[in-house]
Amino acid sequence: MASSRINKGLLICVLFAMLPGCGSKAQDQGAVSETATQTNGDKKAASFASGGIDPATYAGRFQIKLTKEVPLRDIPVPFTVYSGIEEASPTRLRLRAFMDLRGLQEKAPEILTGPLEESCKRQIYLEIRNVTAKGETVKVEGSARARFTTCNRREEPGFRYFGATVDAVAVAKAEVKGQCLTFSIEGVDLDPRGFIGAVSDLFGLTNRINEAVLEKGGEFLAANPVCPPLPEEFSVLDPIYESGGTREIAPGGMGAAVVGSADVSAETIVKVLGGLKELGVLEFAE
Image 1 (tube, rainbow, N blue to C red):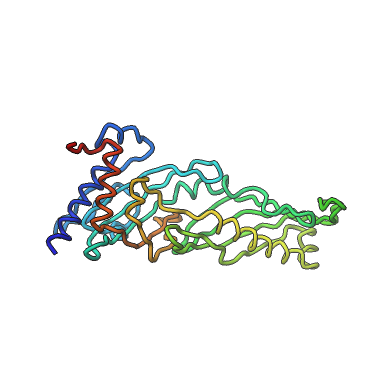
Image 2 (cartoon, rainbow, N blue to C red; image 1 turned 60 degrees about the vertical axis):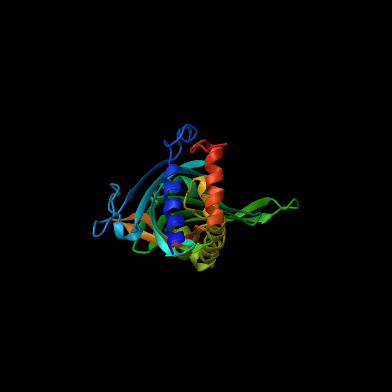
């Protein structure tokens, strides 16, 4: 038991040593900003000025804040992760984390707007106007512009025989898969515009647009999961996320909570120490 406590205490010190500013090479890692505090007894977890995020969602003996930009569709998106760490077993730490996704929420219209399907028979362009969180779901509002065409001999769009624009409201949510949060579309509500929209509804074309949004939108979300950004040096800890999903921050803000654990075996600590030596964060006697 004493040995496991020493291992965990050493690992916490190692984690803190990995924070930028603790060594000459670490200071060059300006893309990541982290802070950490320790709770004691009945003291409440530090809020980190987290703007409406309940500290209970990332409670633990130690708290770590990580801010990083992650490119999605070549668009830089800021993420902030608040993590709480405590003992789970002699070889693992319990992790509770809350991801502030309001940066992603702000960039979502830019990221998601664009072609949804471009086949020779059907071209659908999606325009996203607004994204808001509600409880454990996310509402996406926008419109879908569809063109239905014949196919020519080269399997390219030919004669356009119908086109319509429909207003769309989709409801999505996220679940933990591996080390990431994967979003899925729970449902889509389409509102055809004007006379042309009514005709498309009459001939079942609205349903075809709905199927395309569910299928192609679902494929895009599945191919672009949101993974909690971690410094590269943390990968050796082998974090495993067991549960979590989207959560609302204050009115309409998008966030996500995850719960999992990380490996803190003696072998892992040795690997982390070796990585710190390479970084120049810690000095070792030769």
